Amino acid sequence: MTPLYLQGFLAPVPDEIDAFDLPVSGALPPALTGRYFRNGPNPLPGRDPGHWFTGPGMVHGVRLRDGRAEWYRNRWVRTRAFTEDAPFVQDDLSVDLTAVPANTHVLPHGDKIFALVENGLPYELTAELGTVGPCDFGGLLTTAMTAHPKRDPLTGELLFFGYGFIPPYLTYHRLSADGELVESREVPVPGPTMMHDFAITAGHVVWMDLPVVFDLALAEGGGMPYRWDERYGARLGVMPRTGDAGVTWSDINPCYVFHTANAHEDGSGRVVLDTVRYTPAEFAAVWDDIGGSAHPAARAAVTGTAHLHRYVLTPGDTAREEQLDDLDVEFPTLHDGRTGGRNRYLYAVSSGAIVKYDVLSGASTLHKTGPDRMAGEAVFVPAEDARGEDEGWLISIVTGGPGVDSELLVLDAVDLSRVASVRLPRRVPAGFHGSWIQDG
Image 1: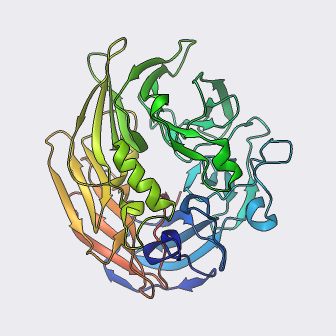
Image 2: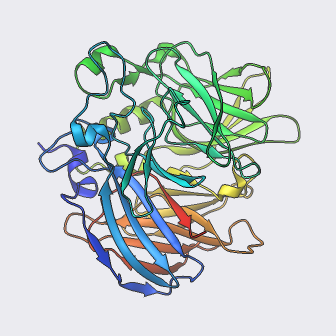
Image 3: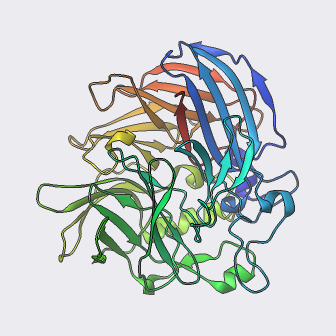
């Protein structure tokens, strides 16, 4: 039977195309002049990568200018794994950090655009989606780079980490605003886990050391080499961003978090962390889905079965936690200018809907795309001279089933009303993460 990740909303496309002067419904705001790029796995025709997470990366891009949709194009990221079929693990058990799928995120920093995946080096792309090549920041980066860096909105620095299955298991890194690697330091943890994301505040880094662990036997079998291990435990760590102080850890209930929403420090010195949290049972269900072993109709692989969850971390004390909502959501986003600070609004994706949360009042608003339409991550673009945190737009690629063209949807982020949509020349498979890159 064809696995889940090769059919339905996830079915890959067979080639690269270009299209120009795309049809627009509604009116694209002239302020949206730039490029929207989104990454995700897209196996070559006839290839089964064995897991949704391991297919080669393909970036889909739409160019907007002065109220027009000038072009769409899609390109595979030409890593060594893609062009040469180079193995990630070498015969001597060392790893080739360039032999990766680069399939998770696409992010600008400094004067470069990077395609990211958490087990290897970033790959630089051009503004037209050509692959420049791997980037190790002048030879200074010797670990993998997470697909979820955090940009400090005050300093412009890009904070990130790398994890691996051999020591050092976790390393913290810091890029300057102009793209120079200025800090790398090991963070001691007991063993190799799948640390997909983290969070920052104005003065701290928040780590998630959770019970999804590396398993060599699974790696030798060719599948995703991570599994749930209740014995590992679950904890959150708070580490000062500067100085020599170590990590203060707090135990939490067993869970898994693919994506954090945001974190900040409150007036009492506590760290408040909002995440999308999976219970052990929810994680088991979604891990089956994304591995292709679930029923073909399953949708949890894309939208998740997790819920918005809050942790309050007090140094030297146990963590307080609470579920904020009962809606199944994934891919949380916010105004990037609020990263590491207080935010009122969050956005997420649910089954057939884009969701806006007011985390102060607890209210939520839905824009429904319909049961046969899958909304991708909604990226917030602030309006120029905006006074309110939510003044701006949400951009999302909405995917239909096979044979149905996709659309680039633009919503008013204040009330989630439809502003405009761009009809794309093909169905774009549901994917992972993307960025709006405003013209300079």
